[in-house]
Amino acid sequence: MIKTIAISFLLAASAVQAGNYFPISAGNRWTYRSASGESFEIVISAAPIQNGEHFYHKITGYATQPLYVRAEGDRLYWLNEEQDREEILADFKPFSGGYYTTPISAPCGQDAQAQERPVEYEGGGGMVFEAREIRYRIYDCADTGVESELYIENIGLARRVVQTIAGPREFNLTSANVGPLTLNKMPGVQFRVSMPSFLVTRERPGEAAATDVTLDLLVDRMDPLKLKYTTSQRYDIAIKNERGETVYFWSATALFAQVASEESVVTKQYVVPLALTLPDGNYQLEAWLTTASAERQFSATTPLTILTEIAPASSEQHFRARAVRR
Image 1 (cartoon, rainbow, N blue to C red):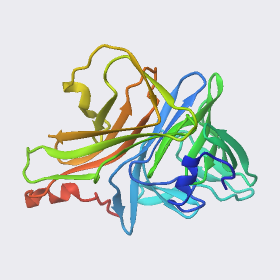
Image 2 (image 1 turned 60 degrees about the vertical axis):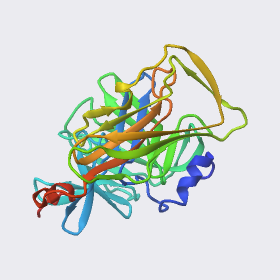
Image 3 (image 1 turned 45 degrees about the vertical axis):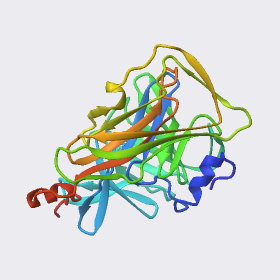
């Protein structure tokens, strides 16, 4: 239960079901960083697959290998395609003395257990109480694997401690896109990207698929936000395909003056028209502000699907959710 938190966190509480410790939804994305500067991302794909009566989303970065997962009650299930069955990936309901096996560090084996007592977690947006802790034990590998995790209702994984040959290493959540919510480590600041629809259509193959991308920077605090830039460029947009390959950069065909500047911002919006000649398929669009920083301070993602409305009948199956036979 969230006791005290920034306004942006509270906005999410009404949009998702209480008790959801890891929201599984198309386009959700979380970024984590350690004190030494190492980082990793967890990303949920845009298009689900169907297996029987259930739909699964591909998740990368959560485990050592990509998995197809779904949420039900207090559990996350993953689809074991080799054995044609689903198994537990994470169980957030405390169960004294009980462990479950998880593939989170495969091929190393790990057991996990949700703890009964809540844990306090303090993030960039304020103090969060009653975070759910999961502890792990490693039984067939040394100096590797997950040691513990903290989860926040309606937000997801907030902290992960992993074992390394140099000792435990702690990764904390620095930014996230969870449904309509964008979180970053600056209290009172939101950055989000949106389109009129994630589905962009065209009439004939080879034509440009046109859409507008809107970038919003919202500052909800007393003092303006000061942004520094090294050129006249203010933002950029990249698109990745389902294999994680970057197939489009907005800035690739643009020119910018090499002039440094500074802006004081309360609210900022950019509307960027795109004409995409990419093949039909599912993509991930990321937009960010090109501030003078070693890392992206303000970035957000959204799923994107390009579809030719009048397409040969033989290609229709390619754009449906892929089915996995039992």
